[in-house]
Length: 192
Image (cartoon, rainbow, N blue to C red; front, side, top):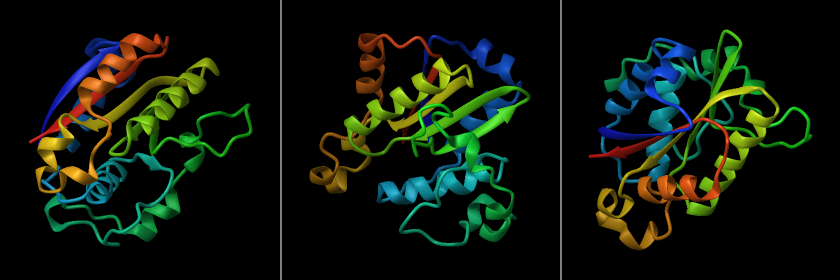
């Protein structure tokens, strides 16, 4: 897959100041994504790709294979991944007593980065933005990354009726510019 980026209150230089390999880690994972028929399959692929690079996760995706696809060369088993997972880093807030979590998280020293893979409705994307804002307000989050499809209608041309109202790159970009968050967000669009 290819990708496009939009840097909201951040820049590539800011991202590499968190960790030199962070840009490459995320872009490299996305470039490895194969074309899939369903959103749940993309979520499963991201699970294997990111956890193989040491990202912690909130939940195991539903409706997927318990084994990583052969093309990813992932050597860790699901049992191993579960054994070292630190789900607490995915927590959106440590003060609001919510059960709200980002999909993935990783600490680079004292700098926390959270990732949301949003292949659902636009409304869910706004929840992701709010989660980043809360974690940033608590001075826990250095960067929020949201991954969406660039053009869901094109990507899922075989099932257009099932993807109406899905979050997309341009809607996310335009929304960020209107709602006026103060936290750094790297928006990543996935395209064929």
